[in-house]
Structures are given as C-alpha cells and as structure tokens.
Length: 200
Image (cartoon, rainbow, N blue to C red; front, top):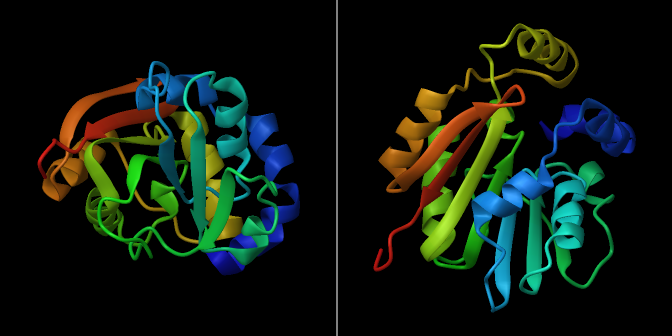
C-alpha cells in the first residue's frame, strides 16, 4: 500500500474532494462527538493526509479533539496538517503501535478494501479502544456498478483490493468483540458503527 500510494499522495486531497468520498458530518454523528464535554482522543486508521481529521475538527463544535492519523505511507503522512491537535504516525492497522485502551473513538474510512488482513485490524482496533468507545467504518459499497468501476481503477494503479461488504464488516466486528450498533448503505458507501462495552 505504501509503495503505490506514494505516487498518488500529491494529488490525494484533490481527488478525495472531487470524488466526494468523505462525509465528515455523518461521521461526527456516528462517533457521537456532539454532546461530549471532555477531551476526546480519536485514532484515524488509514487516515492518509489527515484530510478527514481536519474536516471533522473544523465542523465539530463539541469537545477538544486530539486526532492521531495512522497510515503506512510516509508520503501521505507528510501532508498531514501541522496542527497541535493532529499528529501523524506511520503504521498499519493490523499492528497498531499503541497501548491498550488508548483511544475514545476510532475511524476507518475508505481503508478496509486496501487492508491486507481486515479481521486483524478489527482485533487491534478493539484492543486500543477504551471501554465504552466507538468505532466507525466507512467503505465503498462494492455491490454498486460505479464502485466496481472505481475499484477496478484502484486495483490497476494502487494494487490489490479486498472484497468487503456489509455482512463481512459486521462479522469481523463481532469476532473482534464489538457490539454492532448499526450498519447501513448510503451514497455508494457502507457504514458500520460498533461499540466496545464498558468493563471490557
């Protein structure tokens, strides 16, 4: 992933905006950020250039957010905004370089289909999420024709693409220990929200 994404890194933000793949307000609602009255540590797995993290911070009027953008590509991470509440960490979702119970929220946006071992990513996310924490996943709905076309191009230029669908996401989440709160399809995307029960 890192090798291929280094070529798209300079144009990633432009392409993401042009394709409209980010839904910060929807993610904010799913993360239940509004109404929080404390600092909130958020891990964005596969967060690339930090574009979504920056948008969420701009749009969320709630708590003080501290984002950690994790990505395997150093070229993508070089473009993460230099802000006090956004830090860049190189790494893979399957091998998170963090202690247990480190984060209040986790996002995995447009990342699972580029992940070598999605079930392991869910297990690692569960490990580093605090009890009572929430994880939100968004990935392309591969049942849609337009999505299949786009992913075909991604496979050509960016390497292998995993088959990911709503049922697999729910299965991986359950196996990792998450309580599946909801899942739905919208805007050619699959959304899933899971919670780590308190006391786990």
